[in-house]
Amino acid sequence: MNDAVLRAEDVHKSYDGLEVLRGASLEVGRGRVKVIIGPSGSGKSTLLRCLALLEPVDSGDVYLDGERLSGVRERELARHRSEVGMVFQRFNLFQNMTALRNVMTGLVDVRRLPKREARERALEFLDRVGLADKADNYPEELSGGQQQRVAIARALVMRPKAMLFDEPTSALDVELVREVLDVMEGLAREGMTMVVVSHELRFAQHAASSILMMDEGRIIEEAPPQQFFSSPSHERTRRFLALVE
Amino acid sequence: MLAAFDTHIFWEALKSRPYWTGALLAIELTCVSLAAACVIGFFLALGRASRLRIVRGIVFLYNWIFRATPTLLQLIFAWYALPQFWSFFAGNWFRPFLAAFIVLSLNEAAYMSEIIRAGLLSVDPGQELAGRALGMTRARILRRVIVPQAVRIVIPPTGNEFITLLKLTSLASVISLHELLTASQVRAVFAFNYAEAYSAAVVYYLVIVSILMVAQAQLEKRFTWRSAGRRRRRVAAPAVPAVPHDAR
Image (cartoon, rainbow over all chains, first blue to last red; front, top):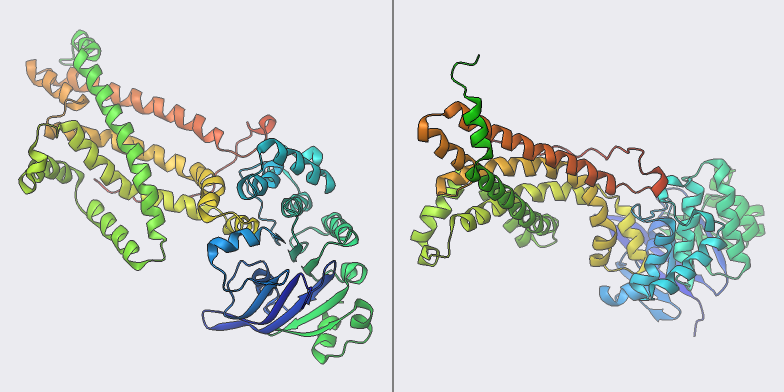
């Protein structure tokens, strides 16, 4: 058997006749950090959404902890979604809730924890991302970097089996990127299983167990950072790296 | 001096009981109709976004019927024609207030559904996605995240609807509901004191609408998502495309 936390096998997905994923496969072992890079439109975000169980796949399979979840009914799926943390490019915080309420909501509404317990745990996780003092602030009063850290805490508080990051720093001003990457590197060190779509190559170099190159709906290359950067085997990867660096 | 305006008669009209009860009746009718219209309109708004074609069709038909016919006609139809269609409505229980309530709330729901739809659409879909990623059900996301934010967008145009509806209640005078306009008509023709009687009615409507405007401003402040200390700073709510105000 396979002990991958997350696994996608030959996933296909089309939107309005446009085939975005054309047989993408990937496997993430426990405690591994995979960074996906690739040109826009290559299907990175779509793959992530399929892994987060937010999009049904047209064909192929998605497994979480060995359990096949593609094809599972919507009602059942909601429960499994809470086992995968997702962080979005544009933070997507609930604007009508304070930072604390944002982090608490999943615990109260999905995990059915009593309010007091949820509150304590949410505060603990806000503290972990360095924002305990912003608990009572609304998202629009926070900087982008702070909002993204709240979003990370909101996902983490559910104690997910894996965390998915969809370009978590690309909507941020340059000075704010670091504080988010610091949190992510900390998570990687603690052994969190992560899939990160990002073009932060320094982060990839430090934190990734391997880097994946995606192009035209497939993963065309996967290698540990050192090898990936020094001797990419694929011509497409070489051209892309030349552009990004 | 004004030609024939007797301030004393004007004051008497203003203080008289029929005006007072008529005004209260108009406010009551407006409030219950608007409340019902919000509920019906909410489901119409959801229905318009339904995946089922038949549901979308029903909503379209509903909005079409209630927006394409004059409200006055709808009132008269409900009061005079409905009992001839179904003897069920010929019973004593079918009072003018009830008839007016049914017509105004069904009518207003068609307009409210557009406003509520705009409000629901104004909430960034990324928040719904984030809610789903957390494992929340759609119903819960709607209740916790989308509706509270839509409310803020919906308040200002709903204030307008309240005003429109308040004025529409005067149409119910034709189905013998003793609201404010009926009261002033009765007083006007009693001794031909049109100027005084109708001026008093004008004052009533102005006062009611003014109170509403203050209440609306207070309500808008409550739905601004900032922490307590900074709440006073005004934030412009995102603009909503105005719903065309046709003569109803």
